[in-house]
Structure formats: structure tokens, C-alpha cells
Image (cartoon, rainbow, N blue to C red; front, side, top):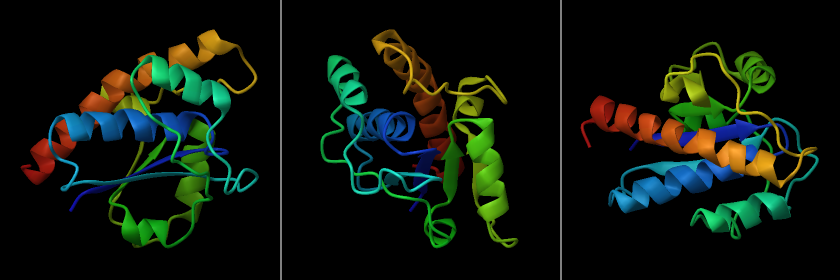
Length: 157
């Protein structure tokens, strides 16, 4: 079963939003049984906390539910559990590369790579305004579709 872990710094804005967008798309395509999905942060400051209120508010406007999610920190065992580890930005991508075991044979990539924007970042909206959260969701939607298309083609599901 393909498995996807979305990663940002604190796991309260971008990665929970990516998880929600991707999960919604997977469910819409009746593939919830076929793909494991989670999110985490490279830092553990917010462990156990729900996503940022603004991420939840804007998510609801787009039809995504983040209310059941809780922040957690990436662990070494995530590289055993997840075939796809998807970073929101370069800093977290580099941190994940350092964390990953030498024998990790999964895919470590940036989220926007799947939207044809290789190397571009999903900007952190935390210190911005509500419009920054809207921008994040608008970036995540085509990237989530691209990721699902990639997984469907690669795994023939």
C-alpha cells in the first residue's frame, strides 16, 4: 500500500493542510483503503496540538476538515513506514535528507514538484494574514492532484 507523509516545520499549518487536501482527493477517488496518509513536523514544539485555527478556518472554506489532526514530530521510524516523504520547503527537505537512513529507498520530494514547480516552496503562512493561508491551499490543490496521479500510475491503482 502506498503511504505518504507530508512534512513542514511545526505540523500546524502547511503539512496538516496538505494532508487534508490529499486525503479529500484520495477519498473523492474512492482510494481511502489503498493509500496511507499522515503529516508531521521536523520540530516538536506543537506536539499534540490541533492545526492552527486559521489553517482550519480556510480549510473549511475549501471543504477540508483538519479538526481531527494533531501535531507530531517526524521520527526515524517514519522512513520505514512511509514510501513518500513530502516536504513543504527546502529547509525541511534538507533536514529530512539528514534524518533519512542511508538505505531509505522511498521518495523524498518537495510538494510543489508534483505541480510542475520543481524546487519551489509552499511558503509558511504562520506569520502572515489569512490571505497567506488561502495562497497555501491554492498551491496545495494542484500539487495533491499531481501526487495522486503519480501514485496511481506508479502503483497502478
